[in-house]
Image (cartoon, rainbow, N blue to C red; front, side, top):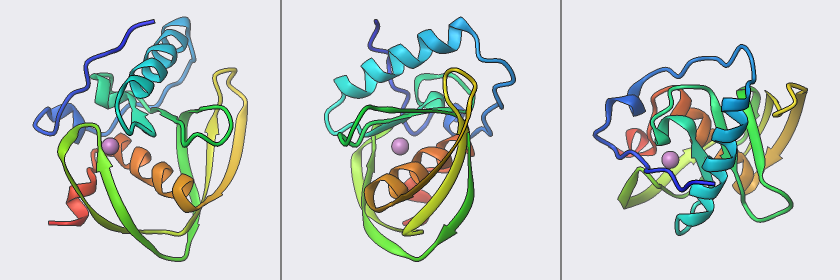
Length: 147
Ligand code: NI
């Protein structure tokens, strides 16, 4: 396993619309392994999106330390409701944090590493992290909501 370098705010890859993954390959499974290692190596890392390690593809890992880590391929928010305001930070913007208003609950569909379609209903911290990471796949950073 490898701890990958995390790109920072000024890298244009963070502003790109990441590519849909049409076929899950061995390369993706290795990338997942390295992204989990990278996220766990980072202090306060609860989520990481592939563009943050220089790969513009729709893949996210999340670990809020409740059960096993989540790996989401092509995640899509299909429903959101409520409002919640809380502090966020980002491994790609190491020196900043701030309050962001997001949906309180989101439902997300995604493919797992076996290519099986999953629907996940979430609230609280998980809902927030899902929205933050899926934003990364769309070139959006949390500071966009603050400025
Ligand atoms: Ni982030």
